[in-house]
Length: 82
Image (cartoon, rainbow, N blue to C red; front, side, top):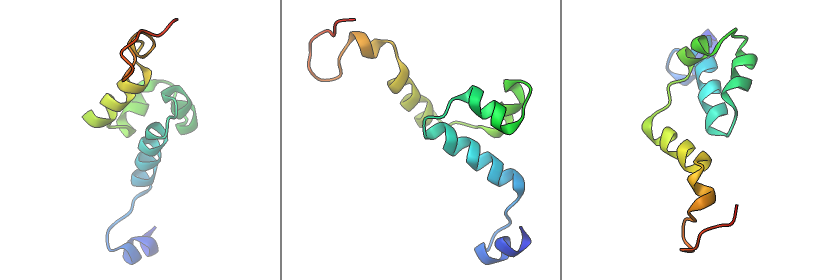
């Protein structure tokens, strides 16, 4: 880690790699429970320590997963059939 830190010009810690993996996994569409298992945590409380989502991430997740997506189309103006 020390060698790579010197090459990059800033300190890289194993925690940094773990945190970035967790955030990138979730931003890529990964599931929080799957992440929990990959990180080896017994519950989601510990997983939360590694994952700090920003408001834009939460808005994006909501836009993707909202049940309203099935009822109100984004552009067509007509209701979708369930």
